[in-house]
Length: 245
Image 1 (tube, helix red, strand yellow):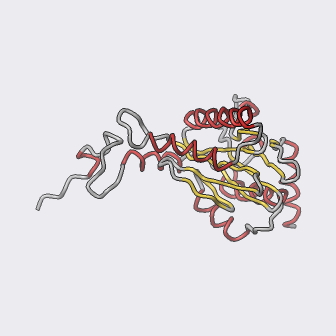
Image 2 (cartoon, rainbow, N blue to C red; image 1 turned 120 degrees about the vertical axis):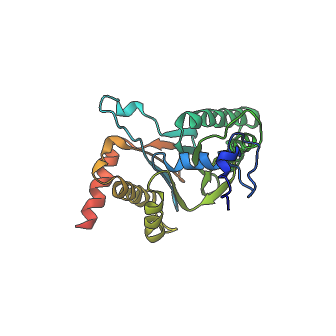
Image 3 (tube, rainbow, N blue to C red; image 1 turned 180 degrees about the vertical axis):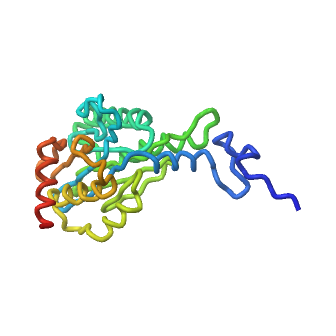
């Protein structure tokens, strides 16, 4: 008996608007695979703020590490990082930054984190049902301080979920296990930074170095976006190792 042809060979992955017989949009699933192959990004909601830790994946020794940006400020109280095709992320982040500034000009107040997330996801969703387009090959973690810390993950389908702690990109399975074991709802920003660095170093192993790490945090008391400096990353890493001794 002749075996049925794989869906890909039958052309179901040639157009974003075409469902396969088993109800899948194959181009969207390919976009999700792109995200899983991207560099690691970790987000943690803390009792006193939010933290983002990410791998810049610098593979060329001639690249200036400080010039590689993997964590972005959307507004002074909202930060974002991404995994996947970072050029796609840049377009979405710039759109979010513009929306945040328009909100301040129009309403003289800061935009809430969920509104930013929904706007990003609305554009992502449009690109899953319009001919001639391709899905955004990127997942974005959006973290902000409203009345309390909030962390959202968006994926290429345009769906989003709120998390206490999450990870996207390579090493997702291993880091998720670490977060499930060691994350606490009463974790502080400092403790979360150390946990993020610990998880990232375990996945990268011998390839881990300070130049590859990018990170940011926002605290509840002032709601101000702050990037982690090289000296802070080194200090938190040393403190984490010191606790192990």
